[in-house]
Length: 290
Ligand code: A4P
Ligand code: MG
Image (cartoon, rainbow, N blue to C red):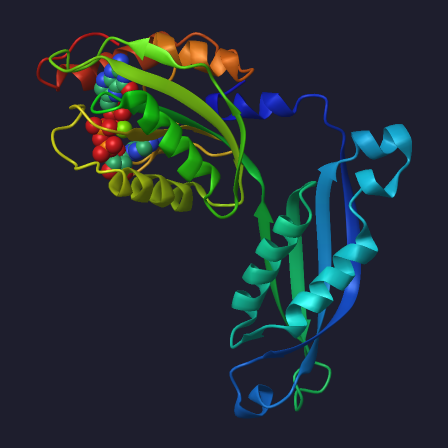
């Protein structure tokens, strides 16, 4: 199992099914041409939703399924209220609205098709998809009221649009790593579900850090709050702006324990990961082992 698959193991036991609603007529104002701005035109939508059907198989009840007729009527009601120039923009807001309205949907694919007047049988379409992803965030604080800071960060994260807090780990008091000349940390990990992309989520995390008084000073230095993205479902990246899984994930004992609280047992770090991380740490002054 690769590091990107670790978090998906929380979905073990799922039996994935797909419902499809096709050629749903949507009446809306959408288009860049003058005549398209004056009245509603009809677009056609195909919507595919993937979800875990295990519960509806167990009891054969619509409440535990994704109701395809509700899917179609929600799409119709939403588009009637909107006005966009671009098909892409309409598709994106419709995908977000449907994912938010159908919490069972794990991923959703949408195709919008348009037959503009004057083009005969020619049609144009735009396809877009979105998904609900699991993510694990690592919270740390070693300045001010550390317990309150973790609580406040958790409240703020739970309030982000398109994010839902699923579980939190126990709180750990930890000796400072990397830079030892700073106060003891309070650390905690959260499991969330989000419709945001990894970069959108990172931007929200950083804006919470700023709102809570985090000033970006010395790397690894003391901070009222630090929020790290430890894992994001189906996503691996090694860029400086976003490295996921977090490079210290399997090297910090408190993260290993916090993830176990969330139901995730991490495989041990490979020799290559250990060597790479030691090299990284060596470049930092006042370092200690993680
Ligand atoms: N960045 C890249 N990947 C990520 C990611 N997965 N999550 C970028 C969050 N940010 C990520 O981050 C610096 C840059 O890393 C950002 O621009 C972001 O785009 P930062 O939060 O400004 O700086 P930092 O926190 O000092 O660096 P970093 O690498 O996040 O360090 P860590 O791993 O957070 O280490 N000891 C204990 N006991 N407990 C701790 O929580 N934390 C640290 C900081 C040191 N010692 C500690 C603890
Ligand atoms: Mg950090």
